[in-house]
Amino acid sequence: MNALDTAAILLTLTAVFGYINHRVFKLPTSIGILLIGLGISLLLLLFGGDHLRESADSFVSQIDFNRTVMEVMLSFLLFAGALHVNLGDLRDQKWVVAILASVGLVLSTFLVGTASYFVFSWTGLNVPYLWCLVFGALISPTDPVAVLGILKKAGVPKSLETKITGESLFNDGVGVVVYLVLVGLAAGQRDASVVSVGKLFLLEVGGGVLLGGGVGYLAYWMLKTIDNYQVEILITLALVTGGYQLASSWHLSGPLAMVVAGLMIGNQGRLMAMSDTTRKHLDLFWELIDEVLNALLFLLIGLEIFVLAWSGKALIAGVILIGVVLASRMIAVSLPVVVLKRTRTFSPGVIRILTWGGLRGGISVALALALPKDESLEEGARQAILMATYVIVIFSIAVQGLTLKPVISRLMKAPG
Image (tube, rainbow, N blue to C red):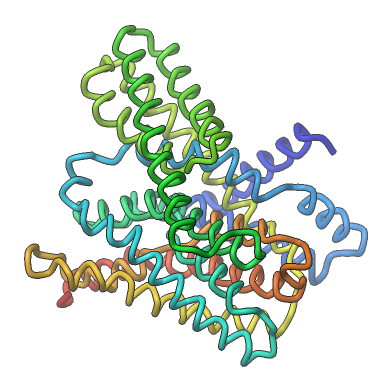
């Protein structure tokens, strides 16, 4: 089956599931598509005939989820998300976002990694400590795709929305770098010295930010010198595709580059380089891209159940680790609140809202699927990490995502 056949099947399934959800279940579109896809996948696994089950398994197995998400979808989704973030609001929350996306993420990585080592051991699974830290790194970043789609309808106060959105946009890039460092250490392929790790962070993170600013400014200058919305939309498409590939080829953080570029075009570009007509068409175009790719990504998450090697022990570990991840998230988000509470006021229930609103999604699944298949990581340990990741992501999107709005409504009335 070629790429066009695969794309046609995925788009058709997404449209059909989206229609069913809109007519019958009336859930948020992406969550409804995910749950319908997951439900049909489970039915096929449990009750489908051998031929049907094998055909579905073969179709899903040929999709490179990691490459599809990290190299194709992510650049568009991050740019579209950053495009609508107000830089002034983000500047007001810069310290909270910075602490959450850096220190908070690293703290969560070590808390989840250490706890998961004991959970895996208790359930009879042999996962070395360094690989448990890798699991902590891939499950700690909140997913901007999952977060942004749900926040639009959750009725979150502007300051809280900026905190959650800003963190999810920036901690993705930082989280991928932490993940790469730990995978290199666990596989014995990377120098563990502070200097070596620091250089990698500086290159990936700092270089990604600088590249995003550079290509963003170039696109801004081009937008400012013309007034033709068709060409201007093409310029933003070139910015995303070309900028992300350039970052990848230079071993810089493509996600951070797209966030910075999106912020520049969405703020300075929107105000100073676009006519009202261009602004309207650009917003509609990127909103449509965001919605379509979001729906496709959540469908893929639902279908990825076919690639899992089912294990009762790994399933139990995953269920236990849901609580571990939430507890670690609460500790990590408490950090900026405790540090900054003397100099600023926080919304009621901010810690619990940030904890429950820290959704995990496709990026965590993609990173788990990218774990090496060689002697550095036993297949049993790899499958345990993948199963635990999948269980946490499904809980995060289905349970946290569906209950986020009522939880926010209740906690906003409670003391912070």
